[in-house]
Length: 183
Image 1 (cartoon, rainbow, N blue to C red):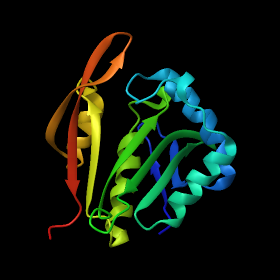
Image 2 (image 1 turned 90 degrees about the horizontal axis):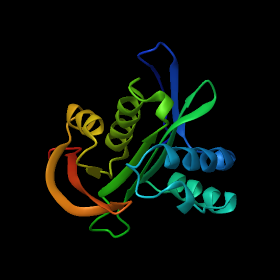
Image 3 (image 1 turned 180 degrees about the vertical axis):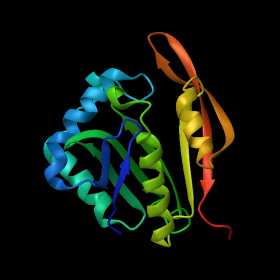
């Protein structure tokens, strides 16, 4: 199911959310390297991202071909401002459930970008007929992200201690989830 959505941000600019395409591979790589250097909330640093354009094309195509995976990019004035990818389970018993990762360029924080990206994810999930539960992990000190997740209906179900180790300091993460249907 293809995703295409627009949202007006708090500053009046327009965010276009759509599925990533193979032609986006170079822009996605540039974006990831940039955001990895802007935030310690990701599971990797800028120097650790070593995906080639060919590998990125494969990743994008894998997401687009599956009915329980999606790779979304958010564009502002043609520039990648946000990215979200969701992967469902690969086995019959777990394909209905999966986890996502999201990032937003620092220059767009606080404008409603993450909320719009997550609303697009939830809309996509409801439309798949496959995805029935979405999970995520978030650092316990990332209060702005936690606020957005809870505002959209995610609930906290657990905590993992010492999941991140950055410059000799450990950080815990919360586990959050949302059920897509009631059955």
